Length: 288
Image (cartoon, rainbow, N blue to C red):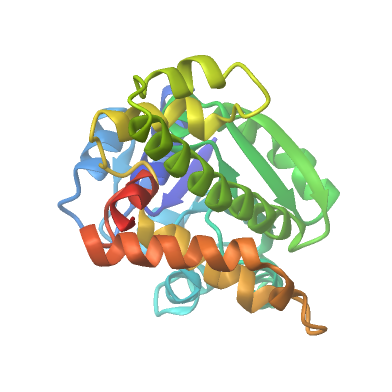
């Protein structure tokens, strides 16, 4: 299948590479042309294009994975963007985290040109993106989901239909709360183990098999112990996602009843002051 993929960051480049390795004709575009992740996708069989228009034209499916709502708005609505370049009935699948309100807005915008839209945010980190083991939460038309499922199964291991447009994004924000608050527990458990004079490796190796186990404990705690704070998922991105949690909270004040989420935001902001926005979320430790 002819597929376009816009956004060659850590996650997007790995997903595009897996699609190319599965035999699809994948054209890619990234705003920054000198990123190593873009080169990695091309080395895996993707074709690098100079413009969004040349990437999108002729593609039955257009994947997007860019940083924030305004970035997606730009690639959709700019001159030569998706809205003006994609053929009617093209299926746009956004795999980033933008929140349910934005997903509904983009779906309505694209529908005016008879372009279809699925919100399909992913979770599983850089490891899941490389190994095609991502969990993918999809909102939109059931018919569109069924059509996209064979392709989504190439990049993910657990692909689930969540409901109408925005449902995938809503569930992803719930996921980000779990990830953010879990990092507090992992960080403080490692700090306490060190205070007690324990081998910190026992925290993921032994406790990871018990009730306190999690994906982050298994995958990120070893990075913390080894002082590896390079990003699989950046502090900048989790802070953006927690901002979206706040912005998309219901008008009746549900956002004010999320104290754990607020605490996680504070700890990530402290980490950003200590090491910058581009380190991985495991660098929360540096904010203590």
